[in-house]
Image (cartoon, rainbow over all chains, first blue to last red; front, side, top):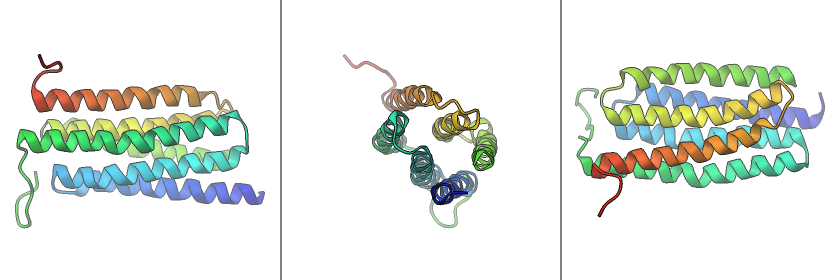
Length: 104
Length: 89
């Protein structure tokens, strides 16, 4: 393997790790807000790491610019969508989990 | 290098399968919306990785369009649940 392949593999592995972490948070956390806290950050970071790994593997071409476009768009769109969803839940009156409550 | 992309693709596909538990059984509307949002995010990455597995990176155009459509769907569903209507007079 070349050195570039090793670096790309490290980025892909880090992205897969963050994806798995976000999924565990989505399943195990007790509340809607805490689940949103887990997925909103881990998914963004995991996706950007995997795309950066693909960019390093690809080299410099048109596809690299497209990958950069996907990554930049999601860096703007993912937190904006998460914020809209969180505000919708808070305005609607979804109860907030406190320590000692039951899972919901 | 194909092996690496294959392993990452299998990991992402299995996490999508696990996330669909929250989309099916999750209590309430919002947990299901969050699960659908997460599945959409992971599907974008899965499209890119599959494009490298079968050595046809033109799948990135489909991934870009899918990102735009998933973002619009999330915003529209959030606004609809918040207000009870889509277009205010």
